[in-house]
Length: 201
Image (cartoon, rainbow, N blue to C red; front, top):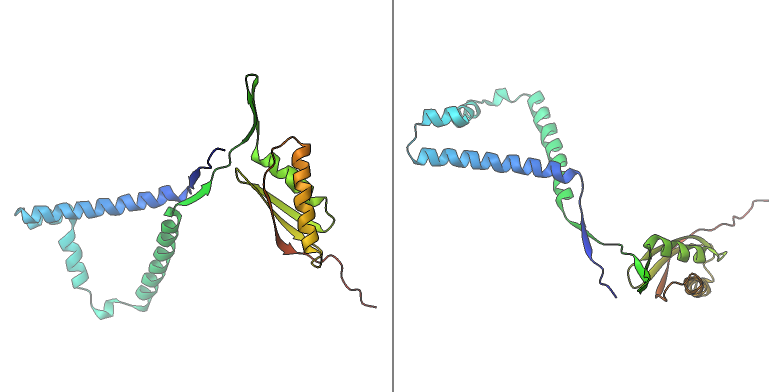
């Protein structure tokens, strides 16, 4: 039995997040280089022309309390909130999202060739088998290399043990009918939908 491999899912926003990260890293490297120039006794005027660090410092140091108007506070607050949301979202998208790869099931491999069955075909067989039960409203199957998981939504709660056994047995029968290998079938109830409503007289 082949081992199922992990795949790391990525988002298109990852590229944008990495662009922002590269720009921030370049800014740190640039101003780090300015500090190195100052350490080697390069003229502060020349360094200021290259980086503008002293001009920015003088501007910020010259600010008075009266310069911070309510409009300025509002703009700064909204800009900070927007930056927090945008950069927080980009950082969230950078988190790896591993998931199991979906590989085909090989049922024939001989000198005449190979026969592979797609995971979706196996899942459709089991879903159809589950929906043959009148008490099953919805069904969703998932093939995971060496087992099948079936999530069902039922309309009768009082007969759950019988429904689960019937769905599992029907799934095994349909796998055999379609010439598919015998696989463990796990059936889970994930929802209950009452179809009969009490009528008011």
